[in-house]
Length: 243
Image 1 (cartoon, rainbow, N blue to C red):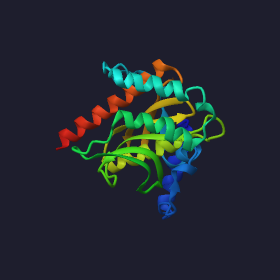
Image 2: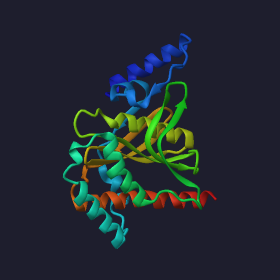
Image 3: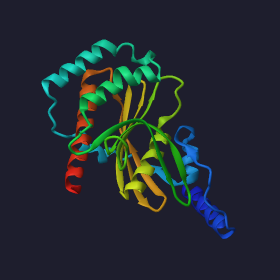
Image 4: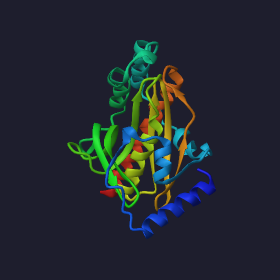
């Protein structure tokens, strides 16, 4: 969104307030959002400086030998057919299996995995509601504070755009948690992109999207796994510190 467009959007919002318009009462589903919709609702810009990912991706985590064998086996089994899978098959046999191998779920610390679970948030400008494909959150049976999202399990062709849906979920999470930043990931076919969202001010955000990670290539798949492990460890430390 250009500076002129931002100024015009702000002027329209101020005029709406002066005229007594209230927040949109009708909620907007994550699955229906486009980038145009999102930019119409909040001030959000993409930042192309990918140095922000350095501390995340340049981690020194070592993957256990059994985990490497798991990744090699699942890639050997499904790697050549991932592009043909529909959303549900891709989720169950490949992505879900990788998530389970990372083991976000932690009974002792009460950290849970949640698939197709509802999330909602409303303020004076937005009213988001919908089901998230996957997120890690506080709680074992019911999600409370959301920590990390993976969206959208789309097939490689004709599946829509998962980016605005993920960003809307991340916006809900930073507002619900009163955070300034949060991590997420979206997947299109075999390609994974990691995302960082930062809150700059009220209803103002910026986001960063990583380079592609091709899960049909073993080295990329190992990096994907390490990136997820890094997030898992971050969440564990955060929960321990909260306790």
